[in-house]
Image 1 (tube, rainbow, N blue to C red):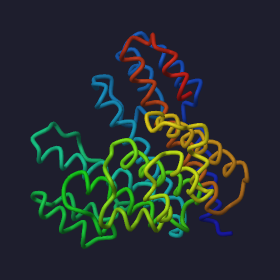
Image 2 (cartoon, helix red, strand yellow):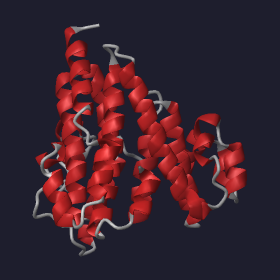
Image 3 (cartoon, rainbow, N blue to C red):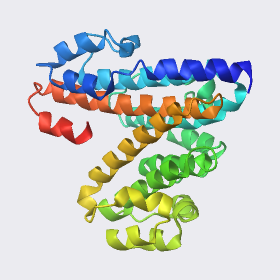
Length: 304
């Protein structure tokens, strides 16, 4: 135990308490309009990035920016040994930045990139890429490698690469279940068989039998135990959204468990990051309900 771990662990607990929580998100979802919800949200920790003038898409993006800011603050308080874990978690934002670059190249509207700072994996170089060819070259010369050709291959490949790098750094139940959801969504729901580097990563993570499975029941039955739990009670690929909600709920339960240990080590860091991530996910959903007039509370009950 070092003074840095003590300070970082205390800070992690304090930051986790800044979340609005399930009750706060439910109250937000009951707002009569997006404007009312944004007025309320601007008074919370999310006011760091959420503005009252935002559209729904801008506000949801800003919620992510606040979560990333929390990660960067935690990185500043923790010893250097905590940075790799936070860099892995921040990898999701680097993927979103790349996806937005690809949309921009296609002439679609782009949102401001997430500011990764020291938590970037290759973002400093990726952000300077001029066109898809250079973007692919940088990705394939970085820790994200290898990724396939084409926008979809990049998006799926980066996510699978992140899961591989997370092995041994993040809880196995989180990593393998997330990989299982990705494979099920791509292969069994979208009908897009995995090929090349993405397939090789999926086999490494989940096993060849799972990757070759042609039906969800078969897929679920051959997954390793740390992955199979996420598909409990889900028999149809069209219901994978239920499995995704189960994943987020498990993340929150595990996060609170890590925080309750009260140790001065990486556990509080990981626990705080988990519960803050779930809070951001739930708050984004609450805003969407508020934007529809706050009348669809049954839809929010699913995630709350």
